[in-house]
Image (cartoon, rainbow, N blue to C red):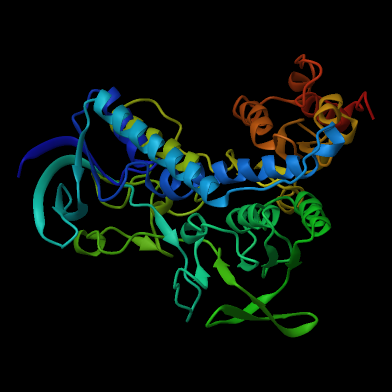
Length: 465
């Protein structure tokens, strides 16, 4: 046994490394155990590299339509391998940045696989399963993340049947691709590969793509995708996926019957599975449910001194949720005043084009919960800045409680939606009413004016429509 810590973190993803830094800031001696690259799946195989690729897709789409901006090309080409390489370099740079942050905050980084030996001991093993160290800690945070959920009975071979990780490493776009699942991952890769010439078919069992998003917003995105030439099958169940030599065939059933579709590859994007196995949970008695560790609002498990944050603690599986859970958890351990996690007040973003961002209740959910609501909308087609940048498709939609004028939800589809949503996040955190938003002067011309106009449209009437 080489080290004793006040707090040890198992996993160096966006939850784990943030928790470790917060712990050090609170004056605790901190250790972090990580078996692979710092930054976790998000930084190395998710958030960062995918957004790099999506930015390349945005530029490609702009170049394809460059003539309307006054630019012409004799022959437009792209180097997809170089596009992929840029995304990998960005991931490496950010991982090194996390390493630097941990060093700056005097956090001991222990390489290896961390397993609970008891409620205060973490066993460290190497890639061959051999014990290399044991550490003692007063508090232990489990932040082991998640992995792509497998499709029952189908083997991921990395070529014909792939996950998002393999989709990040292709040296050239396939001619065709089936995507099973129309959540954010499926939608983002569908947009990405379509822009670079891949024939895309997306299969989703729910009635709408982006099933957790307000249905009005997801329907607008579906129409946009179909206008681009992406085929989408909703209310469709995948009965089987069969790879065969150089193609893969999916049998799907929906209201029109059963049909088969074939493509060069099939991306499985049906969600994630918490990494709860082989970390000693059963041995020490940590309770789990539905592939996730059960926690309270301060991320405490049923065992004193053991906590869980991020994807391993269940939905919503978002990097910024993991990071905030880490801060809430450590602040509670350190005796700071913290309100705990509020899962009704967080943004969810999809970085296709047009972008989609949402916070709070959907219109349907607000009605189901018994609210008497008023809804405001403002189209980007009426926004001066949107016209200037040539991105007028989409709208801002806001939902308020009609009695107390409380902001219940906000939903955006359109240019820079993932940036604009933060104003609504702040408004909800501060419990703003509509007048506090509309009395805030927004710069002109900006996309953010659509936020004010949509809010004006709830009770008073928008000015510019």
